[in-house]
Image (cartoon, rainbow, N blue to C red; front, side, top):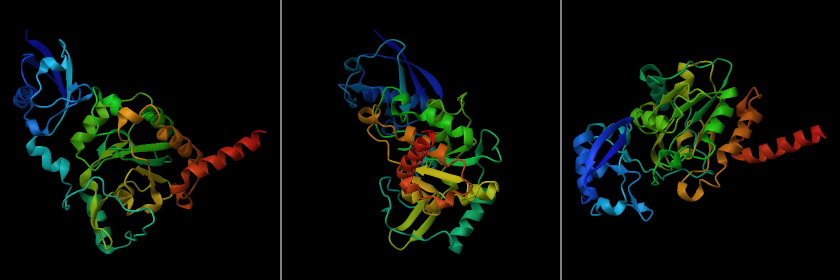
Length: 322
């Protein structure tokens, strides 16, 4: 008996009629006809067998599909693939590459890099969601491995969301305008934030999204060409933000090489199925953001020592209360 299921992709739902005797590869061909996403580009999040992603030769009847079940897919059409995977002016990107914390690389004053930033300020358009609030500090957040485990498998996007995400953003919004800046395409940012319930959350507002097109490449003697997120692009567009009132969270230090004093390297959130019950990084960082929100100048801080700062301030507050 045929099963009626739905495919959820890029914010849209597609009706599919499938036969339990079909293979996963047959389903992917059907999905390609509906969405234009090639089978090799499809990631069907909740098609699993014994906790593992279903192989292409596996029959659907082995996966215990149910009537009206919703299958979630992540994937990109070929015509959009270059935008998602290859930021401008960049060669091959190695996702796991990062720069050692102890290596000092001075880049921010080089004329060729400043020229690229000026060009981004002139030409790049942020995806504005809400008006910035002059007088607020600025929090810039990465997505993959910072707020979301984009490599693990799950039945629902919420299972890949970092714990305490909404609580963290709600607390941060009191004192900070919030910007999401990912090294992927704007389409992916919009899809991820919508699926995670971030875009239109009633408890906080996102000021704007930024994607790979706002990034620049820089040349380092130690590592060669590196892709990075220069905060000068934001500061050039909104002059009430600066190094004094901005902080960026990213799991890769190379993403804030142009503004090392402003970046805080967050512990990456990976293997969500193993660690989502114990990961409390965002919960702790919300305390840090609150504690520093009254400071006039963030450049006096060493964000690498944020945990020590939190302990010290909380101890001081405890003494004052007693």
